[in-house]
Each structure stands twice: as C-alpha cells, then as structure tokens.
Amino acid sequence: MKTKALDLGCGLQPNNLFNKDEAYGIDIRENTASNVMSADLAISPIPFPDNYFDCVTALDFIEHIPRVIYNPNIRFCFVELMNEIYRVLKPDGYFYSRTPAYPASAAFTDPTHVNIITVDTFPIYFDDVNRYSAMYGFTGYFKIEEQIWHDNKIHLGTMMKKVLPSS
Image 1 (tube, rainbow, N blue to C red):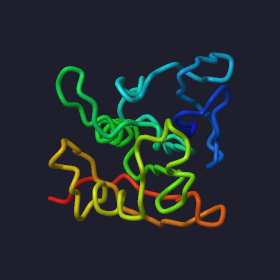
Image 2: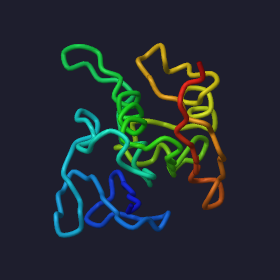
Image 3: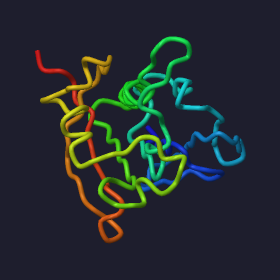
Image 4: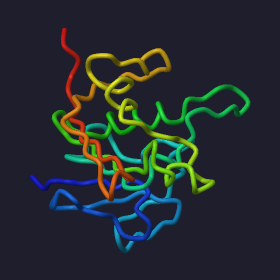
C-alpha cells in the first residue's frame, strides 16, 4: 500500500518532508499537475476522506488561520482545522507544524499572521493530556513527540502523533 503525505498551504508544489510515496497539497491556488487542490482552510474542510494520510505538514501556514471569526456566528477556525488534520490522518499518523512563533518578531511582522503560536499552544490545547481546546470543539488527541526551535529561534517546529482516546 502506498504511503501518502499532505502539505497544507503548499503553494504550487507540495512538500514531502517524510518522503512518502505520494504527495498532495492544499493551497488557495490549484495546480492539479502537482496534486495541489484549492481550498480555503480557514472556512472549508480538508477535501480528503478520513484516515487517508500517513502524515500532514503545515510549513509557514498555521499562523495564517484565524483563531476566531464571526460570520455571522462564532467559528473557531484554528480548532476546526486541527479537527480536520486529525480526521484525515491515519491512526499513528504524524502532523508537523513549522511556524514563526512568539517571541520572535517574525510572528508579528507579517500583517497576515493572525494566529500567534507559542511553545505552549500545541502541548496545552491539542495534546492527549490537557486538551484545553476541547471546550472550543476539538475532538482529537495528539501526542506531542517533540518541539524544536529553528532559524535562530524564529520558527517553532512541533511534531505530533495522532493517537486514539484512551477508554
């Protein structure tokens, strides 16, 4: 069975950091020649079936997803996206995010950065222990595998593994 990777916010060519057999991407712009589908992930679901990918990556992307919008009702876009990532990952699949993070000025400089990530965001809100984002509708469980600063403490890389809830 072929392994599959999904890269969110990939531009015209998906990254394949984990060297899977097939690489797919999602971006605002479509490029079907490179397996890139068009979707606005701030408001739309990931257009793939459940348990489809071995890994999902988001490189310099998460910071562009609003945490909350009112349209006209409240939506927790970031939480909804994390639910979608959990949904499309196979059990024991990996999600890797690399994003400019607090306190680096790069997290704030770009006016399209609307979701500032800290070293506590994923471990406290989206892990399999604390799960603080459950109060906002998060239904997944991620085990935090590692967090590493890159580029002289500008980008925070977070590796998480999809786990099933313990009974």
